[in-house]
Image 1 (cartoon, protein in one colour):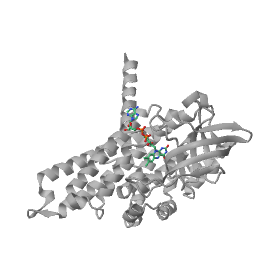
Image 2 (cartoon, rainbow, N blue to C red):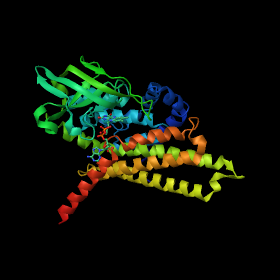
Image 3 (cartoon, rainbow, N blue to C red):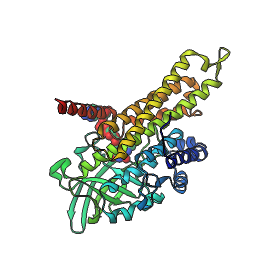
Length: 385
Ligand SMILES: Cc1cc2nc3c(=O)[nH]c(=O)nc-3n(C[C@H](O)[C@H](O)[C@H](O)COP(=O)(O)OP(=O)(O)OC[C@H]3O[C@@H](n4cnc5c(N)ncnc54)[C@H](O)[C@@H]3O)c2cc1C
């Protein structure tokens, strides 16, 4: 399908594909097996200016936005979702800063993210606050010289590897979500430590850790925006970032589709390649239709985000839900088409199936997002009455 990408967008996409094929493909299985953080690939991505894709030009970026981020994430995820999410989490770590930060904060942090010298991360989830993110307990008490952070964040992508964290914590603990604020916390701040690297089903070379804050003093100038706007900022951030998860899902689904077609072409049973069986053709055709539909929705959602439109919860949630459900179905069907071989680690589709699952869970589980879409529909109905 023609998506009318600009010349720069096409260049970014093809460069990301080249890195994925030349640098990631040969090592993805080993990184997955060893659960090893992909530092060498991060350096390749940085050298190719990939981290500049989603940063404005005035902070050493290429001036792109959500769509450029999605194009890179999709191509990386087509080969390895773990690396795609590591890359995307750095963007997640600075989007709040980009939207609400002061000029001084942007000048201080964004060029390092753009060059790939430092990675970013975003921390909202806590052991008792997952889908119910408003139930966070981590506090940021105002003291002389800054904010004293205490609490634990859970399941944080790039945890321990990133150097710049946007952390949502309560500056007014009796006000619940309305008392939450966003703070930039640097890795080497005293009182800031990490839990063990979590052992996961999929995206195994990516890093997922707890962030532990014990009397961690964060300078006053590190607050992003005003006190009390942290929760709203986080919700707005997810509205902008969900097409990124959608593109992760589209990428892994595309990779699985291609692997399934290749296998079906060369696997001979009953004297013929299995791709000549109508039942396999039907499966492949449905996989292709859904991958393309998901891609179209993700690109449309990303363009809506980049347009500056205000009410984007519905379209961004739809793109994430549809693409991630597609990824789970397509990767599962790819394993089915590859038969016993597909179940083996020697073939890429079992990793893709494991990697796809997370896209239905994070940045708002698909159940929670379906609720959010329904709420938007109800509001729209109410407006027209
Ligand atoms: C690998 C990984 C990386 C992550 N990275 C980050 C990160 O970088 N930063 C960050 O802040 N967080 C991160 N998360 C956290 C992630 O966003 C949460 O796991 C997710 O929001 C779900 O929360 P939970 O795991 O606590 O599940 P729960 O909220 O306990 O949900 C459990 C089940 O109940 C369902 N459920 C709960 N409430 C509702 C409801 N109201 N309606 C319908 N169904 C409901 C859910 O859909 C789910 O099926 C990550 C998680 C993982 C696993």
